[in-house]
Image (cartoon, rainbow, N blue to C red; front, side, top):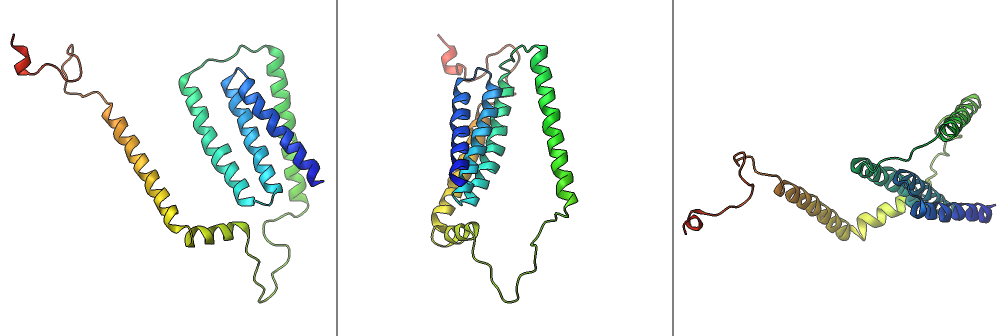
Length: 191
């Protein structure tokens, strides 16, 4: 079953990656990129790299794609003209997906599903360390110095971006009708 699921996720990843490049509408390309990121996260989960899979979903499919969509909407690239059939298909698909989610929620609540362990842990038993715990221990012990250097580089980059952005602002002290920026000084006015 796992090889078939891996092949299915790999096929979804390849097809959605091709559609990102080949599709003309930038918003649709960005949504196919989200699908590609989720398929890649599924492959990470199959490879038992749960932490990397969840980071893939949270960071890339969440934060980075929101940033991409804001940039696309900020650029106002326009939209394709759609007919009544496309709108009807989209609405119908939305209703079907919504109904499936409601049915799943009712089934989960009907079976007494609740978060937490099914049975209380045995007294004195310590759980085996998971991937996230092992990554955290390694990151904050052996690789602490590179981790801190990376955080300092990101801080310097953020401050640099703010300084560059503030440096491009036009000064408010220029009078109307005069060009902004450095002009000829008093010695340069004389012939």
